[in-house]
Image 1 (tube, rainbow, N blue to C red):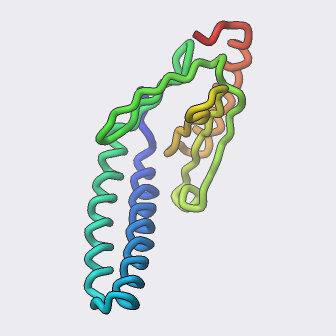
Image 2 (image 1 turned 120 degrees about the vertical axis):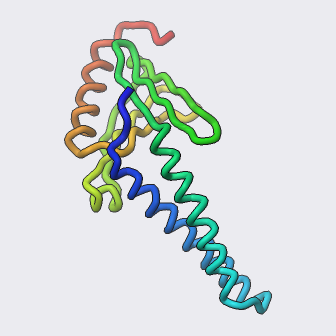
Length: 153
């Protein structure tokens, strides 16, 4: 099993900070304008949420793994609930490489695998180098084409 690039922790911690800031701003707006509370509440909400979400981001990195085997793409992830996903190559419809602004700033990319199915019909492998994401995209595409005649189950 392969782990993600360590810089994905920076992306996830920055996303945690952004989420904590947005929630703190909402709490601050409600607290100041409607409940006449001081400015301490949004600061406390930001600090508490940032610590919780930041720790979750770091733990998430320790668990996230993926592997391309001969028959499928295997993913393991989840901090509180461990999720193991198997994506058979015959179910792959198309594969994209994606780079969000935070990923571009940290020199990372993601590979998104779209599958035939109704629930959660796509999986994302984050925290790859741009070359690694393109390589994974090409590799999955080739394996999906080779598996076209096989049965999905």
